[in-house]
Image (cartoon, rainbow, N blue to C red; front, side, top):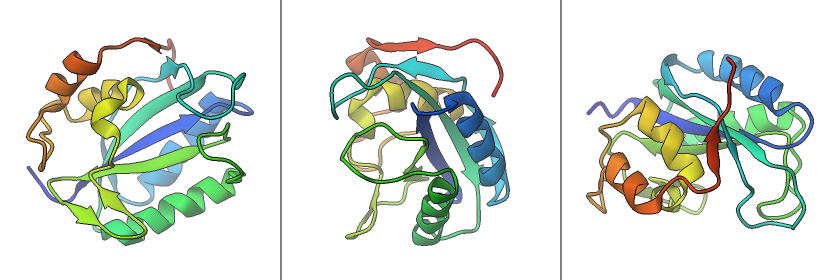
Amino acid sequence: MTRDDAVVALGANLGDPRAALSAARASLARLGLIVAASDVYRTAPVGGPPGQPDYLNAAVRLRTDLAPGELLRELLRIEREAGRERRERWGPRTLDLDLLLRGDVVLDTPELTLPHPRLMERAFVLAPLAQVWPGWRHPVKGETVEEALARVGLAGVSPEAGAW
């Protein structure tokens, strides 16, 4: 496993989510080499205020020289450029970019926890992650993406047709 590969989860449920994911993917390509990109999935919102629209979610595996903190700052910049406003936890958004993992790096700082603390519990994260890095094993829990996805299931997650 290479330590340089990072996986970024992309999500959006306001405006034109597919266009937001596509623009974010292009921005991510300027940060390194996109090794793999998942399909797009339609997912029911998890948490947050009731009545928000479904999300479109995807993931990108990125080979980059940026340190995790630098990469996080770039992801936040891309979100801001897409009009992201952080008003409420798990609220609707024009774009959400989460740094899920950086190879086998384990990190816990006030700004960033790697691997992402909830990635092994969320189908909307695991389904695209399984496409971009199927053999990845959580460096602390020891569980593979496939094992976690089998445990969590795919309720509320469905593939969306079309390129992004």
